[in-house]
Amino acid sequence: MINSLLQPHAFPGRLIIVEGIDGSGKSTQIRLVQRWLESMKYNVFFTEWNSADLVKKTTKKGKKNRSLTPTTFSLLHATDFAHRLVSNILPPLKAGMIVLADRYVFTAFARDVVRGCDREWVRKVYSFAPKPDIAFYFRVPIETSVQRIMMARQVLKDFEAGMDLNLHPDPVESFKIFQGRILDEYDRMSKEAGFVVMDAIASIAEQQRLVRQVVLDRLTAYNRNPRIA
Ligand code: ADP
Picture 1: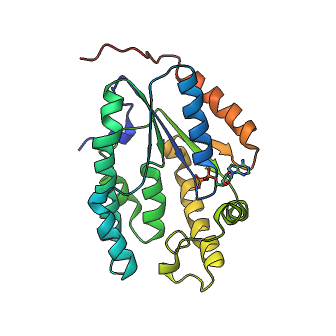
Picture 2: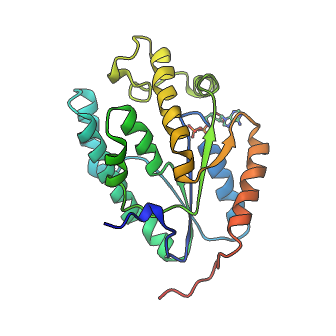
């Protein structure tokens, strides 16, 4: 079976993705990139990994009554991703647009492994996903991410804190342990995934300056008005 993630895709569009733990600032950065590209009249499509109705009810139920195993949890998310790929990512890529994705398969690679799935198995499950043209990884210490999340909304969701894994009775402590493991997984896959690693402690403006530089460098061969076959 061909692993699409290992070779550049042949679509006329471009796929730019952001990864990082919660509170790393990835959404802030990708939204700024979106506005910047749009201001230059690029055709941009933004997509984030929010569960589609197709699987939302099942995952919600499974999370609530804790009936999901690492494998069923992973497969449900893979279904969700496949749906997002077919309906949100591939059409604009084929039409030659710049697709900006807030979270991609690497989120699953990190999260599912921390929840107990085999590394190679998860990679095989997602091998149908096209390789991104640019993958930014916003690397931030756990303390910084907790501070940012608490300042913004003051509560941590149970699943985001990994409470189902019984790591610690206190949600903040549990979050730190859980997200710390996710951080380790991201670090581990950095080379394999070809991440552009960002120092996410830096100011929003400074990071955005660097992000734009990378995007400009990598868009040199991009034709914004492709002839669609
Ligand atoms: P993520 O998408 O990684 O969860 P967000 O972009 O939603 O992170 O940012 C989380 C919070 O941190 C938001 O309130 C945002 O305004 C703030 N934030 C983002 N980047 C920075 C930064 N570089 N410095 C300080 N605060 C930031």
